[in-house]
Length: 462
Ligand SMILES: Cc1cc2nc3c(=O)[nH]c(=O)nc-3n(C[C@H](O)[C@H](O)[C@H](O)COP(=O)(O)OP(=O)(O)OC[C@H]3O[C@@H](n4cnc5c(N)ncnc54)[C@H](O)[C@@H]3O)c2cc1C
Image (cartoon, rainbow, N blue to C red; front, side, top):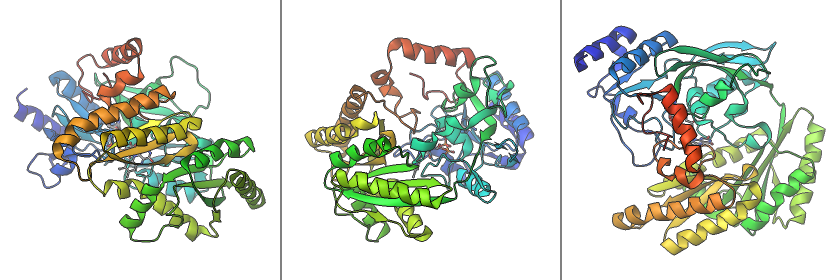
């Protein structure tokens, strides 16, 4: 078909007002996501309203061999939702409905464009809980979370997105609509195809519906801040807390530069911002006495690990204030200068070595890095800042320093992405983390499901 013909076919499928061309006012927002410094204009943006429309769009793309890039909230940090070869940008944002909340079986059925925070707040009002909690929850979508297997601070106790996805409806690259899994806590009927799609970054299928496991909402929380004189001491107290038999629902780490960045960005004084390292620890449950005992035990453990002070939030307002600050860490650090973020993850006991190693590498290259992240999961977001460097030095030396950091991460038993995915930006680093035989498994799966490479080409597969 000529370009005009497939444009008009798209208009037939979704309605002319939902096909956006480069002259449209909103078009430019679809040229980038939240990954620094990347811009790729799609040929056309299409905004379907239901799974049948998605299927028709993918069928058209398959017959014309046009790339199709699924997109949720566009908050991705590895360039996954970018139309790097042009083609159709398929945004799922209109498909944002909660189709069912089943409080007999504790499952919800939702469309992929649902904003994660909207889902969580709707559930909470009914005493139900969906734990995965990316800091971008106000603008990312369930579909994007599934495609990236998003995490967040609650992974230590509650796991990540994959642990809640029990069923998926999706459209494959050949335009077939499939249903994998369902409202079943146990299912060994065939390969685990639900989990094949989770974390596949839009390269194997477009998710059109998800069946998600729910939990009862924990009624109470206790939140504590603990400053330390060294990163080492902060990190050492993490396993000690768990050895006491307590699994916090969040155990977050921020180094001094991150605290200072939040302070500048928010224009407020951040508690303990003069200390080298800060832990944010939260426990949750339904029995306040138990939580008070747990917080007391945690404080005792911290004292044996040379904590400098302990602050326990006294009410919900103080808890919110602490979390607002933590959630703004990413934006605060990124507001300083252009940056490149590495989403490193190591076994949690290796965190001090990772933090120290990152500083050594950056010092050697004359770069500045600020790290914060999920200490309980060993997942550290290391932001290398351009501040003050010439474009030439930045472009030449940043990839070399980044590669050294990722090599260090792998040598510590870790890997190159904990929750942001491989997408476009991290693809070339995949061989640092996976051997040829392992990469070949990924390539074979991609070839089997998408032989013409139309679904999100140039992402996640090396
Ligand atoms: C300030 C900030 C904080 C963040 N904090 C966290 C955090 O704490 N934890 C974390 O894990 N991530 C975090 N992220 C990263 C990002 O929010 C997550 O990766 C999120 O899951 C992306 O969702 P999205 O809807 O924005 O997806 P997009 O960015 O639109 O897309 C991401 C990927 O998903 C694919 N995709 C989207 N929808 C579908 C679909 N329906 N079917 C198939 N593929 C699809 C896209 O093709 C792309 O590959 C943060 C980002 C920002 C900007």
